[in-house]
Image (cartoon, rainbow over all chains, first blue to last red):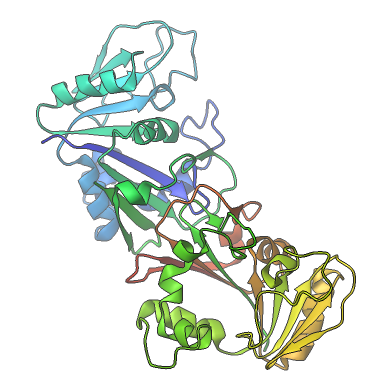
Length: 213
Length: 213
């Protein structure tokens, strides 16, 4: 049965990466925030195309592998696709290049002017402006029994959590204090009452908190 | 050599206990926030006077024991002593009863009218309105080579951290999302650059993050 999953990376003080600009589409703090994650063998292979077997294994890599397993469709915010960076350029095709690491249908939430679906490698991006539950229903149908991942950013994941639409939330907390960015936890008080919480620390010092219902 | 230590208990979203009122001097969320801690054998014995050996042992209790070991003086905010609750009553002697669990000199930071030192059991409370570094110097002198603990609340601990006066910070993060209270992390960005961070999860699901310089 399809489960709806969300993965988010934050600092000890609850921020996702801040300091977004054209040269840092994921935010200036993204590198530090994601260092343990991007160092894993799975991420090196799946996202950075390094097939030499480089990268860390063990706990952190287990989470990275789980991130990619059993997902049939993804939903992401306009910012994560890149729509906010050149909002007036209809030819702008986002940050993900010619071979996006998704290889599945990706639904991009946007209130900008409608644009046609865009296929890059094995990934097709669909742009949707409807209610999130309707977009989710479409994603579930296209996932064909596999899971749907809410890819981010923080506000998109939070919107789905606040609407009670997320079954599994994985929060990776890097052992740094950022002091800026998007605050992830706001409005999520009591999440431990609807979901079961487990906590684990990886070799990197990252704390992995999982909420599951 | 004396080290300056601070211990703080927060939620995943970085709050210390909120909802303070006369019936809940530590805040309405204090019980949930501290549950794993107050359940330990050490806390049962030291704070609640239960000498029957009741209470949890293992990781959580290791931290509880360390909390009490090697401390020669404590500094706390006016709120933690209880001064904010009946500010106009000079006879009000705070929340700690006739046998406070300190058994050492305790320096209470306050800008209220001067009041004489107060001895209860083995604890003497001194009320100080001076600069925190001067109060710290006095506490260090009275600790006689043992450590000085910054007892809380969150804003007191943060004041000493922001002033660069804390050598060891222990943050216990309960696996709950409170959504209200005092925000602990504000202003502490980059603390991982001045202190070495280690992270550990206890059986309770509480994450213990230690900053040490």
